[in-house]
Image (tube, rainbow over all chains, first blue to last red; front, side, top):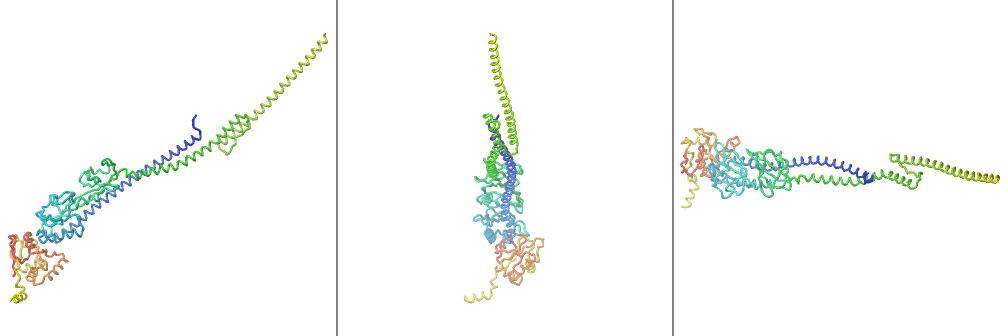
Length: 380
Length: 136
C-alpha cells in the first residue's frame, strides 16, 4: 500500500509520462540540430578559409600578373646599360605610386647588382641568395633579405628581352606584415597558413605566431587543441601561384561553435518548463476529477457504517466505470436494506410470539393453581 | 667682329656638327657598313648580320642632335618622318629600334650586346666597340 494518495500518484505518473516524452523529443531535436549546426559550422569555416586564401591569392596573383607585364616594357631594356639614364628607376617609382604598391620594386643586372629600386639607398647591393633563380618566374615565400626590414614575400622574374639572353631580374616584394594583417585572428576565427608541400603551418593568434602540425589528413582530425582551448577546423582549397601552392586553415573555438547548440538547449528547456507547468496543473485536475467519485463512495460507506442506515445512496453522475461502481454499490445497499428489514420483522414477530407464550404459561399456571386449590378444598 | 661670328654660326649651323660614328660590338665579324646597309637596318628590312646574329638597332630620342644628324645623313630625312615610319611598322608587328636616352647609354648597350648597332657623335674610346662607318 503506497503512502501517497491516488491523485498524487496519478499526477506523478502523468508528469513522468510528459517528462519522458519531452526529454525524448528534446534529445531527438538536440541530436539532429547538433548535427546540422556542426555541418553548417564546418561549411562556414571552409568558406571563411577559402575566402581568406582567395584574398591572399588575389593579392599575389595581381602582383605576379603585373610583374610579368612590366618586365615586357621597353624601358626594362635599359637593364643592359645598368639603367644609365635612370629610366628604369623612374619607371619603378611611377609604377609603385600608380599601383599603390605596399612593397618595393628592384631591378638587378645580369651580374646580380642592384641597378634600380624604389627603396632608397640600396643601389649596387648584390642579388640576395633567396632571389637567385634559374626559373622564368618564382615566388619566394616568407623570407628575410639583408637590406629589407622584416620578412617579405618576393616575386622574382628574369628580364629576358626579345632576341637577347637573360639580362637581369625584376623583383617585387610584399611585406609579410601585410599578409599577417589579412590572417589576423578575428572574434570567431583563427587562421593558419600552410605551404602545401610542408607538414606544418603558421597559426596566427593574438599572442603571436605559433607553428602547428598540419598535414594532408586535415579533415580526419575533428578537434584541434592549441594551448588550453580546443577548436573546430577547416582548410581551404589549394591556391597556386606559379609553382607555389598554399592553403589557409580556419579554426573556431569549440565553445563558440557550441553556442548555438547551448542556446537551443536552453530554449528547449524553457519551452519544456512552459509546457510542464500547465500540464502538471491539468493532470492534477484530471486526477482529482477521477478520484472525487471514489472519495464520495468512501465517504458514503463511512456514513452508512456510522449510521447503520442502508438507505443512504451515493450520488452517481456520468456513465463511466466509476458511475457503474456507484450504481452497483447503491443496488447492493438497497438489497441489503430490504433483507435487513425483513429480518427485523421476523425478529419482532418472534418477540411477540414469545411474549404471548409466557402470558399463556402464566395464565395456565394460575388456572392450574386455582384448580388445584379447589381440589384441595374439596378433599378437605 | 662678335656679330660676324654669331652670323656665321647662324648661317652655317651644319658646320658646327661633330662627326657621326656608326658603332657596333667588336665581336661582330663585319668591319664596315655601307650607307644603304645602315638604312636597311634602321628601316627594319635587314634583320640579321652575316653570321646569323639578330641585328638590334639602337636609337636616340627624336630631340637628340645626333639623331637629326643621323636621319639627315643616312635617309636625307627628318627624325619625325622616320618616327612615323616606325610607328607604321609597329602596327605591322615590327619592333622599332631600341631607344636609349643618351649617347653613353648607346655606347654601353653596344658594348654589351653583340648584335647591337648604334650611332653617336662622340667618338667611343671603348675597346669593346668598333666603328663601322663615319659621317662628317
